[in-house]
Length: 365
Image (cartoon, rainbow, N blue to C red; front, side):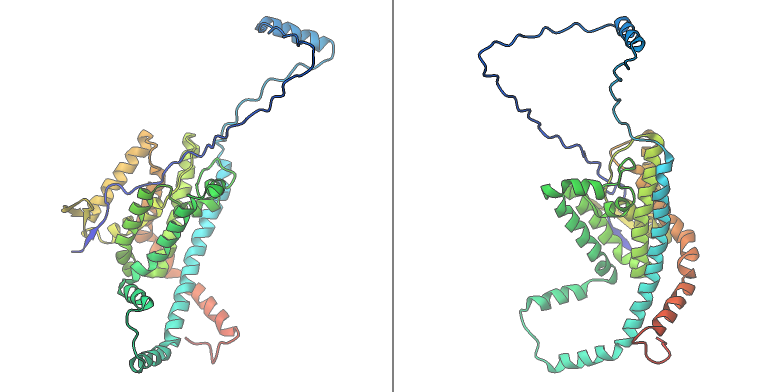
């Protein structure tokens, strides 16, 4: 049995931040300095509906158009036509993610094979070269080599989230962050925020909790499917969960910005729990109470389903459910449908690399 300690029942979800910025507007008033006293104009009583209709009739007889009614406040459109571009972006980005992951895996394997003798030579030089003591770089290398493959993979993702979190603290970047790093179906920017928002967190507790869960499950998910396939799953799940959020917000008319990596992390969690349902999990603050991964997944899905049906708005439950269902679908069907059918693409890339400059011999690996 494998003990994986993480927050099981409620990972911190997409924060919904207030994006309305109020600016104090001052009207410049000039004081009249002439010697004459200005006559105060008496306020005219408000016209009733009958008087207004009579005046409009008189203006119509004179050929003068009546004054137009004041414009109504703008309300977000609930048209599903705005979701066509996000849908195309979701499908295209998911395909490109797994296609790029397949090519990345090919290049990694090719690089490891070609650098085998270089590694042997490097090991021989280390034995005859005096070792440095107390060097900071050496300590960093020792720490890095002590990490698992999964922890090394998610280190870059955690660094990207930390960088975006710092950008939220820069006042001059606030408008850009709200436009491109929060996802909202009523916004002008629809597609790129679907990806960028999964690296965006506004509160420290939000980013810390999400990254802790990602770090906790990184070794299991990478050992299960490899770093290339994991990165493709993580990025695709983030975009898919955002699209599901778009659909639910458009259907219910409850528009608002969302951000956070919870949708992608839910896919990782669901994939691990589906593949290893008997693995033991524990709540971070209550490590003495353990339960199976399958039970935890059922509880989380049930909680988000209830939140979606009852209209709870503190969390983006639609994005959570979208990520979890995508993770379950990928383990049950998607791996066979997508990843195991990557051979034609890899063969095309191999033929392309073999004809390229610097490809010696017959281009074999």
